[in-house]
Each structure stands twice: as structure tokens, then as C-alpha cells.
Length: 428
Image 1 (cartoon, rainbow, N blue to C red):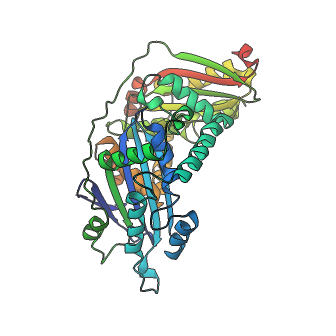
Image 2: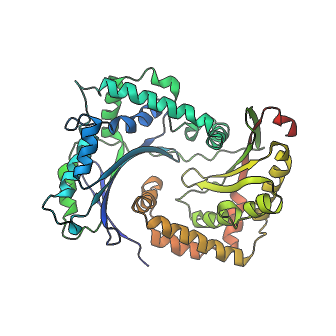
Image 3: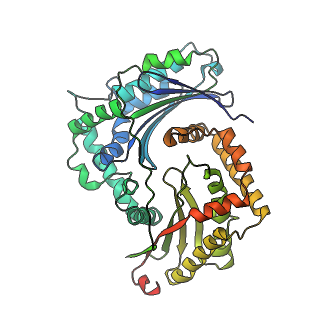
């Protein structure tokens, strides 16, 4: 089975990925800019997506900006930033109608490419600075977002787990940035950093859709033709050793406790054992049929939720559970028992086969969504390794019990983090 054909060509300072598919009735343009996580500029990178969506020199107000998208038959644009392993990735995504299905002479694709190029290269600016009013307003928006993390206890607990688990590592940096950095950022400094980013980040452009009769390799470079000097920095894949797991307990005014555990798998997307890690996690805590959900929530009624997921490019596995503060010791014990059972091979061939089906189905569902398809393909860029969706499915179906036991030998509990009610520490 072939999910999609990806044609990659090297352009002037970036890579162009052309994905021909008749599955989608729209065309998707995605631009990704990648740089190593860095404390000096993480807040600027968090702020930029908010500023860049507020206007260009051609469409200088928010209303004109949105109307331009409406005039492109309801095109959509989004910009965000995310942490992927030790990298920070800014993504521009635009979805437009495929002209094949419309009765109009308007060249939607070329107009959309011009619009996207303007957003990236011709943002609203005044004398080599962003618009001061926009930057001030969006700094407030980002400040509110940073503060809002504290109110979402699950997100806050996950952030604190990573703070403690990855202390001193780039991965501990907060993707939303830092409130104390906002004071030093102004319209001039932000613009200056953005020009540096456009020059130095590794850039990948994806075009996905029914592209027959379109010379994409000629069309895209006519809109993305700026001189670039990308810095290709080899990310250090640190494998931190820890003899004894850390245990962190913090209190807040809240009712439900958040018990999160962080494991180091020492396996990333580039490793041969990555497909086996997917199956390992599926049996352990990735699905409602997994050990965590069955044993922590269903059999012992200890958790409001209990699941696990892993980070593909950092090699970390996280367990999330919401519990009554008085159940801390018992819940932690049962979670650790489930991991011990995985390490000792306490699972059946039937569970392995079920996990394979669940992972492959989940993978296919992701591939059915244009953004999901691009994200999966971008794993290869992030990892600097080739593993196509077809190859991944093949490798998943070849995972054996011995492969899962090998995964178990690599996994180490690093940190137990418990966010509990005030006075809940007495139960720990």
C-alpha cells in the first residue's frame, strides 16, 4: 500500500516537498522553519505567529487581511510554533480550494502563493520594524497565554514535570516563552530577529493536493526566491543518565491531584526500535484497552484518567493520571507495576496483534488529514532519517515480543511529579 508519493527537490536555500494526491479536494501549502531550541530567542519565536497574522503591507489591517482570505474562496491561514525534540518549529499552513472544482478564471493557487509569500516576507512594518501597535497588543495576548497555563492543571503539571525532568536540557524550555522576556522585546528587536530567522532557519515547503497539470517545481520558486543562508546545526541527542528517580510534590489550591511520571526510553524516530516503542506504548498506556487504563482506572477506580504518550524526537515517555490526593501512593505503585509488567514481558501475542492494529489505524487516520500527513512526513526532516509511512506500517507489522522486551530494557523511570491539593502532601 502506498499512502502518498513525496518528491523532494533542493531549491534556493530550502527543500520543496511535492505531494501529489487525489484524495484531497483542496490544496495545502505548508512552510516549516526549524531552529535548535534556545533560551535567548524562544519568546520571540512564540510571539511571532501572533504578530504575523495581523497584517501585511498589502493588507495592513486585520479586516483587510481576513477579507483577502475570503476573496480566495474562503482560504484559511494559520501560524503556530511547537517544540519537537530539541528543535523549535514555526509552521505556516494555508488551505485553498482546488481550482479544478470551481468555475472561475481566477488563478487561486498563484494568488494564494502571493498572499503566503507576503505574510512571510512582507509583514506590516514601518522603517524596518513591525507595527508598534500590533506588537504591543500581541505581547499582551502572549502574556495571557503564558499565565493561562497555570489555570490548566493538566498542562501545568506536564510543564512542571518536564521542568524537573529535563532541568539543564534544551527540551525544558517553555514553548510559549517567558513573561519576563516580553519587556525587552519591541517592534524593532522582534523584526530584526525575524529577519535572522528567515535567513538562518532550515526551511521546508510542502505542497499537497491534486497537482496534475501544475508545474509545482517551477511555480513555488517564483514566490519563494529570497536569498537564504540556512545554518544546518547538528542537534545533540543527549541521553541523560539518572541513578535514582526524582520525586517532586507541589501543592496548589485545587481538588484533584495530577500524578505525572516521566520515563526515558532512549529511543527516537531515527532508531530501529521506534516501531517497537509504538507497540510498547500502545499496550502500556496509549489506548483505552491499555494496561494503565484497565488497571489504574477500571479495576482499582483510582484515576479520573490514566494514559501515556511519548515524544518521538526526545525519547521520553510520559504517564498522565488525575487522582484523588489521598490515593497518591497506591496509584503510583500500580502505575510502576504496569511498567514492570511490560519490562518483564507480561503481555500476550493477542495483545501485541491488537496493538499493531490500533497503531496502524491511528496512523492511517492521521494520514487522512492533510496537516497530519505533512506532520508525519516532517518527522523524517526532524530526525534526519528516512522512514516513509509505508515503511513504518511494514515495520509495525514485523514487531515481535523480543523487540518489545528490548524496548523495556532501555526504559528508565526518571521523575515522578505530583501536583496536589494544599495539605495533600500528607498523603504522599
